[in-house]
Length: 167
Image (cartoon, rainbow, N blue to C red; front, side, top):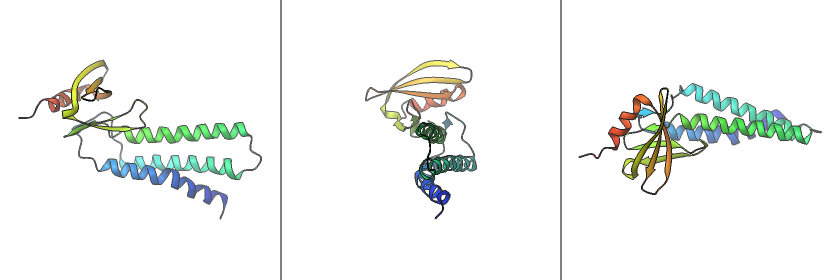
């Protein structure tokens, strides 16, 4: 088996399968009432996954199969490939943040984790800032954690409407 094919196979196992699995799970969420960020067409998500797979393939091939590589050059390639991997994951996850019928979905401070918070667990909402067409909120939960939440300014009223107690 050629080194490029082996590298591609490994990159598919490391990137394509997990990212596609995450995307498939996220696409099963109900229709959002308001999104924090614009959702891309699905073809763009798959193009992003393909680009990251290609980047990781090149890294694996150059790091493992090319002999006599400079260790500092391999380390820099590792950092670049790792940043591409992280950036792609953040871009996929942030598309699904927003207000849903039963809960809100947010990402962590770094964007690498996703959190679902049910409305009954929200005790307080503080508006941190409004800049342009974006409002930054701090959602306080019954567990005492403060969750940063960003919404377009026009969607903040939808969020507050969902927070009101339902009869």
